[in-house]
Amino acid sequence: MSRICLIGAGPGRADLLTVRAARLLAQAGAVLYDRLVSPEVLELVAEGAERHYVGKAEGEQDVVQPRILELMEECARRHALVVRLKGGDPMVFGRGAEEWLWLAERGWDVEVVPGVSSALSVPALAGIPATYRGLSGGFAVVTGHRQAGGCQEWAAWAKADTLVVLMGVKRRVEIAQCLIAQGRPGEEPAAFIENGTTVRERVTVTTLGAVAAGQVRVESPAVWVVGRVVELREALRPLVRMAIA
Image (cartoon, rainbow, N blue to C red; front, side):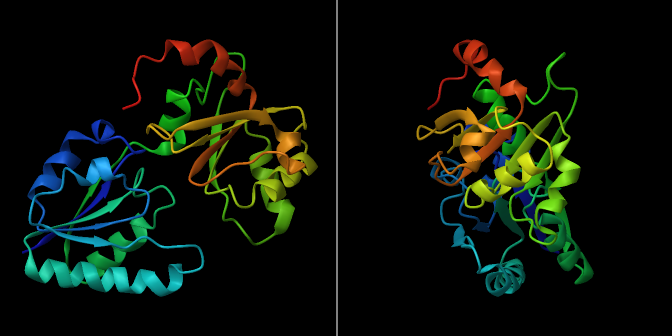
């Protein structure tokens, strides 16, 4: 029976993939990959394997997702091993669990290979840890696509020592305003790490108030960190030994 693997591609660099992920990419007969999967990672796909780009632009999710599910089944009927490759970790805002359930309900053999999530790895390699004794005793990772409830929905997250927002670039002004309305200080440090771990990485250190005022220019994809741990970047970044390549 064919096997379908839901694999996390990590934050961008191929050498941040798990060993298991790299091995399966080299064996797969077909690979379906998202827009956040880097060209460097795709170089590990077996020569001659089918490659299907299934990235979704904003607003296309409900149209494209059913086609992705159908395509996985179509590929699995042709190949013994099919890989569904997602940026970061497939279970962190990647619809990985939804696809897993859908495939399992249809009797497919599914394997999940976790990936290094950009939520923690990208800030860490930029010199911003999620926790630090005396500054942050915990963190929350939230999607910027949250909609229902307006500002009130941010109340639960506004109290986290460190707040990491994924997919929040487009709504950054609104989100920052909501966080301030829920009690976070406008002078609190914030940072955006664009294209983390790649040669295109760009880090912007600012304040929550500046974001709320629309003064911070950022491009997607970016990981957004809010909290005092951002203050550590100045001291820690020069100590990072992992060269960006």
